[in-house]
Length: 113
Image (tube, rainbow, N blue to C red; front, side):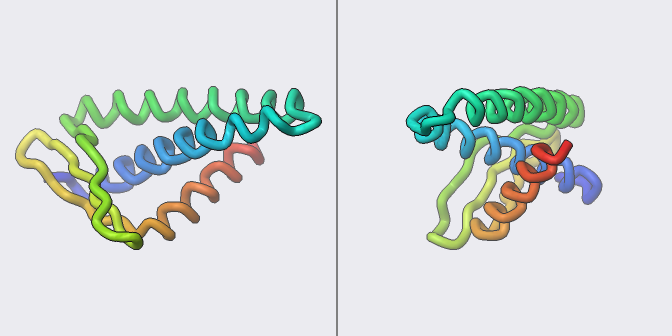
């Protein structure tokens, strides 16, 4: 079972994962722009910082015997995340739109650093 204080860490991990995936997905589109070198340098630095924090969060969760197993697409509005813990597996339900907006906020915070 996930303790309440660990839920925030799991959510941060999920947002970092989503941010990295989204930026990787958009990367080829940026290569086509006229000033691609400028944009790609910004995105490369952003990805480096996001990956660093992602792996640190993953290690911290692993020390607590928490592992994200997989995403399950429930509907067009919700996704489930299956989490393996030391005791039993847990399923957390997330609204896709809220997760998307929180991930955008996370990326914006990293850009403002």
